[in-house]
Image 1 (spheres, rainbow, N blue to C red):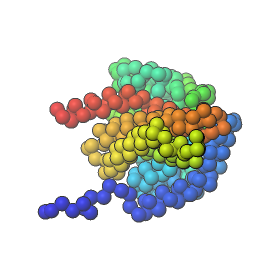
Image 2: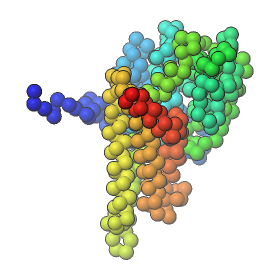
Image 3: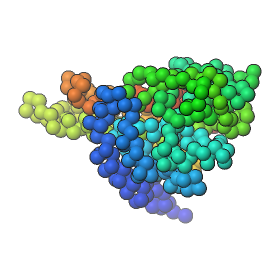
Image 4: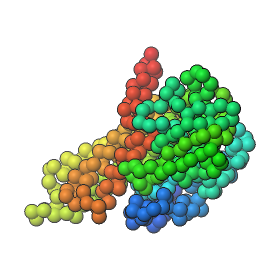
Length: 378
C-alpha cells in the first residue's frame, strides 16, 4: 500500500485545539504576570482564586474518570492544559495534585481510597502532594530513611512541592528490614504531621518540609510493589511536566522575539543583529525539538504504550534543556533590562530552574534514558 501522509496525524484534534484556545484566553485574563507577581511578592502560597476558577472550568477532572467525579476526557487534553499552564506560569498546586497525587490514586488506589479523594480532587476541594525526596541525593529504595510500620509512618521529607497547602500526601516509605519501598496515603491534617515552609528559587510554587512522627498511613498498592509504582508514576508525570516546560519555553521565546523586534539600537531593530538572530534561532530549535519529544510522550502516555519509559525520559530531558536555554537567552536578549526585577524574564528563569528539579535532576533523567535505551537494544 502506498504511503499516505494523511494517515498519520501528529497534531492535536480540532476539539483539543479549541480547548487550548479556551485555556489560553482564561489564563491570559486570570493568570497574568501581575497575578504571578502577587504570589511571588506576597505571603499567599498560591492563587486560591485562580484555583477555584480552574475547578469551575473542570480542569482538575480532565483525566479522572466520570465514575469518580471527573470529566473523563484523557491525557492528551491534560497535556494541552499543562502546556498552557506552563506558558502562563500559573501559581497553583495543579501539577502536584493532578500529575502525581491523583495519578497515584488512579494507578494503585483501592476503591475506597479513590471514592474518598478523587471526586474532591476533581472539584478542586482537595490538594494533594507527592513526598519522595529526602534531601539533594537521588532517592532509591536503599536510601529512603522514612519508614512505615504497623499503619504508621515516621521520617522527614524535603522538599515537598505544595506540602504546606496539601490536604493529603502520597508518601514513599521503606517497608520492613529490606531495601524495598511502598506508597502510603497520609492525611496531613491528622496528628503526627509537622509542616514547615521552605524557600526555593521560585516562590510562586510553594514547598515544605514534612516531618512524620507516627502519622497514620494507608498502604497504596500491593505491599512491596511501591518502587516500580514510583517509577511508573514519575514517568507519567514527566510527560505532563514536559508540556509545562514546553509552554514556558515557548513563552520565553515569544517574549524575546517581541522585545527584539521592538527594541532599537543604532537606528535598527536589535532583531536585525546577527548575534540576536542566532540566539533566537537556537531557542527556536530547542523548543521545536522539545515539542517533538513531548508529543511522542503524549502519545505514549495516552496509549499507556510500552515505549512510555523511553518517551518520558526523552521528553523530560529535551523539555528541561529547552526551557532553561530559552529562559536564560531571553534574559540575554533583553540585555541589562532583562536582569531587573521589573521585567518578567526572571519569572520564567525561576520556573525553568524549579521544573528541572521537581521530578529529579536532568542528570538523573539522562542516566535513566541511557539505561532504558541500552536495555531496549539488548
